[in-house]
Structures are given as structure tokens and as C-alpha cells.
Image (cartoon, rainbow, N blue to C red; front, side, top):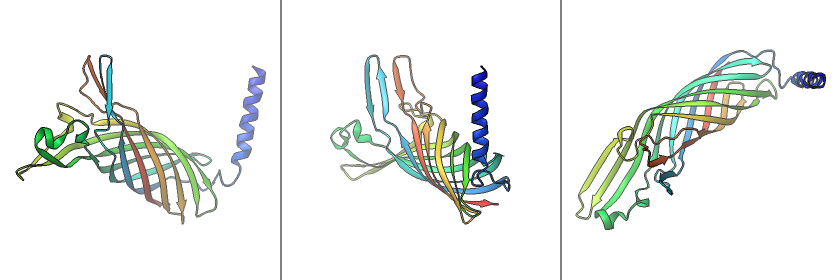
Amino acid sequence: MNKICLLLLAATSTFSCFAQDKGMENANNKPYLGLRLSIDASIPTDLKTTEGSLSTSSNIFGTGGGVALGAVYNIPIVANLFVEPGVDFYYHTNSINMGNYFQESDVFNTDFQNRSLRKFGMRIPVEIGYRYDFDSSISASIFTGPVLNIGFSNDYCVTTTELEGVKYHDSGSMYYSPLYQMQRANFSWRFGVGVNFLKNYYVALSGDVGMLNMIKNNSEHLKKSMHENGFQLTLGYNFK
């Protein structure tokens, strides 16, 4: 026990000395508000279907893009360790790969076009990170933390053209789809790196790993699962 206490004391002392580096402990740290604009990639995993001992997977929902706009509040904890809660509102689209399930023109005598999901919602990240100050105008940070995603709408839009040239448009909510009913809420874990430059400007790269199954309509004998990951290129301005 005494040896463990001595090791903990030595480790604490070493960290304290290391944190005295002016790049890792800034006496002028203060809370600040920041605005954030991000270009997003929405990356669903393959849809896995399990019925009894039979299991199949397909990329029915493709990778899509979108934008998000929001704000964060950076709160110093100790040295240059910080916590940064935030909120943003996003609009994303994803493709629907209908051809994975049938030969479109042969079976339905139609040509499927403009197959997409259109999603609007809100994200609430709570990131904890550490920043290194190179000088008063530039610094770099690493961060991680949970992200709660709340969907306001998730609509499918499909336009078809029949062989006779007649166009037909169908749309509806994936939250009420009888085939692939999707969850409104998602819980992800974010990892990222950021750089503050010219004192007030900010750029970051981050990725979200989806933790929840986004398919809702499972039964005892038929299981469907899909997770939704994300990637963000974020630009910002900090009011310091």
C-alpha cells in the first residue's frame, strides 16, 4: 500500500511539473462563447437483418452530407483542461440504394430517381478536452465526449419514372415507416482535434461513433440493426 501511495505521489508531482509548462497552463483562461459552422458527413453502417440463424447485410442507406450551425460555451476546469457543452441544428441528406433489393425496371417497370433521406434535427455535444498554447494567438486541442442527437424530421423522398414516361413522387416519415422505422434519438461518442488561430478563429476535425441501433421495428424473430456515424469539419469564431 505504501508503495502504491508513493507511486501516486510521484505521478502527481510529475504531472504538476509538466503542467507548469506555459503552453499547458494559462493563467488567463476564462469562459467564452463560440459560434460554430460545420460541414458534415452522415455515415450509416450496413443494415443487418437477422431472422433465426440467417443473417444478411446491405448498404441500403448511403453516406450523405449536410451542414450544421450552433454555439458552444468553453469552461476552464484546471490548467488548460476544459469542458465545452454546445448545441447545433443540422440538415443532412442520405441516398437510398433501392437497387440492392430488386431489379428496378424489370420488376416494377419503373426507373427510380432522386432517392434520398432528408433529415433535420439538433445535436447536444458535451466535450472535455485539453489545449496547448503555442503563443497568445495560436493553440491546439484534443477533445472527446458524448453527443445526444434529437431528430425533428427524417423524410424519405423517391421520384420514379414509369416506362410510359409518367412521373410519380412518394414521400413520408421514416419515424413511421412500416419497413424500416427509425429512432428519433441517437447517442454518439465524439473524438476530435482543433486549432485556435489569430486568437479568435477556430477550425476542427471530429468524428462521431454511433452507439444506438437506429432501427426501431424489431420483433422476437426478426432483428434489424443499423448505426449512424458522423464526421465534421468545423469552422468557428470565439468571443474572447
